[in-house]
Amino acid sequence: MPRGTTPADKAETLAWLRRISGDLATATTKRLEDSLPWYAEMPPARRSAVGLVAQAGITSFIQWYDDPNSTPWIAADVFLAAPRELLRSVSLTQTLQLIRVTVEVTEERLQGKGEDLRESILLYSREVAFAAADVYARAAEARGLWDARLEALVVDSILTGEADDELPSRIAALGWHGHGEVSVLVGTTPAQFDVDQLRRTARKLGVDVLIGVQGSRLVLVIGRSQSPGRDESEPELPFTEIARHLEPGFGAGYLVLGPAVPALVDAGQSARAALAGFAVARAWRNAPRPVEADDLLPERALAGDPLAKQTLVERIYRPLQAHSADLVTTLWSYLDNGRSLEATARELFVHPNTVRYRLKRVSDVIGWDATGPREALILQTALILGSVGPDPARRRNAPRRPRP
Image (cartoon, rainbow, N blue to C red; front, side):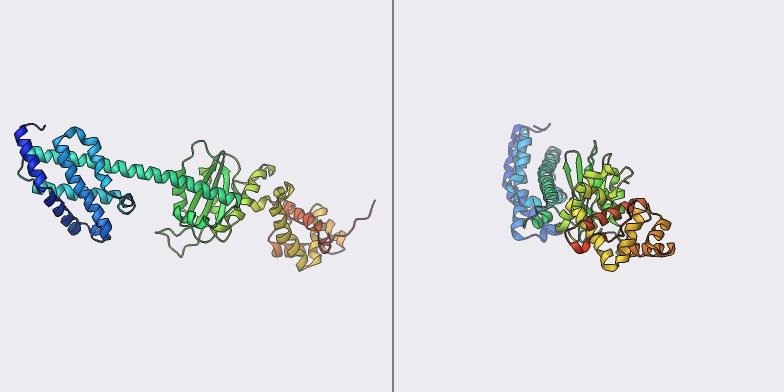
């Protein structure tokens, strides 16, 4: 019992509070409509639910004033009057505004009734505010756990290629803001994994990410998103540059970026390439970090990756053969002769400048330069795969060396 308050005074105050509780609830509802625009704009059913919370708060205060030891459970019971859906439509900030308005109206009506009663109102409002924070914290924790499980399920579906009709709805439930092209980045999970920092970095780069942790493997599905403050005239960063900025969020080891695909529903293609590249990245001694999965096509093909074999044949062998048989013949000879222009020219009975011109044409047609050691390996692997294919028309078209 507050100091200076006799049992008789308290009983009289309690009886008076019970008589005016209805008027307090009505006045509080009117003040909410006048002072909080978000309340006036709510549908009638939700306004009614908010009004029930305010009325429960006033009733709960009267019970608490009668027995202050009941604080823990009475303060929490205030929010039991509202349906669960209200948590999704009323934010914590709005709830605190609701508490403040209710306390202001109650203080105005109780003005002149003594400092003890006013002090009790302030103390009780503090307890209700803590109870509100606890309710929202529990809801956020439950939503966070659910989102984490749903995100892991979506990433796993992308990695396994088992996408179904429910995948778009699951992605939407996660609040995915990505649009357009998507790429998958695979690396190792760091010992101290800061997922929030990784997401903040992604937002600064203008991308959204789905994160999957599979033991020692960390997978990021990266999609471009429109940042609120971003100038649309600014060019979008390539995925390779985005991967370099995200690289500090991964652990030590190889980091492989899958090729870009048109949309999130196609991310399984990028994921398969990235996973296949991650599995064989150690075979490239000087592999950069990050490395594109398509730069590991020879290693992937040697490891039996059918996607890599198909990519090499379709992007290198077939375009060259369709363009000119001389380009295929020259490339074969150049690679067989240790990338020597003079030796190639002698074998083909042409001038070295002709060989140089044809190699330039090869680069123009397929985008790879045969004069570099790494790209020469990629091209030679493609020629081998194309020559041993099932189609006789795609057999190796190279001059036979005379036997010694």
